[in-house]
Image (tube, rainbow, N blue to C red; front, side):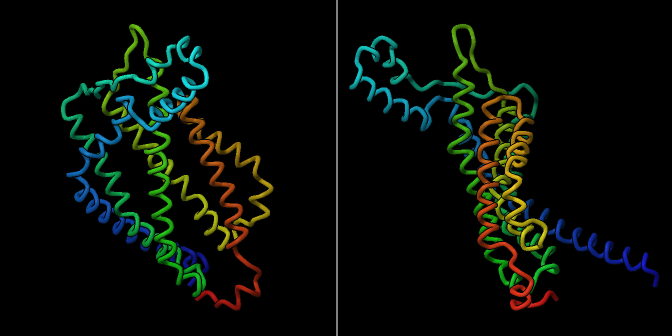
Length: 284
């Protein structure tokens, strides 16, 4: 058999293996979508809560204004902070303009939720795909890898929904004035939110990805450390794909912070010297 055939055969085997893993992942996501279908209206209600204006930012403002009222009553009265501190809950609603638009929005929410529910299966299939390139000792880390990867993605998604999403919506609503009112479209609102959920979930996966690349010998601590400025630039470029400055900022900062965490994670748990790796076990 020629060298060219030898190269083509392993490549085709990898494609067949990848196809197998992707099919399992798709089936898991579909099952997760079915499980999350009935709770998707509750999830929609949760992500639309910030448009009422009642979020954790409201409570923080109230506490700040109370301190100002105690320490400087004149300033509190002059700037009419009592109106902002006691602002009533706004009855805003999302709007749709196309037939079946709410149905397709529910499908999108269910798909993303189903994907999150299927994350253990997705990461396990990913591990099975890359396992042949790992040592025996590294292959035993499958359950820590699946667990940490799933938790990291969920933490990133929750961090966005609980902390960042209210900031973005609150900033948008701050432009309301006399003759200028918000009129959010259902699809645009939900698509924007779901896209950022995936972005933040992936951002929080960066340290794990860097650790894996380190274990494969592709990156090292010194390489990551001396390329901080390029990482900052890359974070800004990735964030620049979003239209407004606030969203760009809240994406760029966590992304670069994850890069810094990656550096120290690689330093602590990255690939060691060849002699130490040989002692742990050879690659099969």
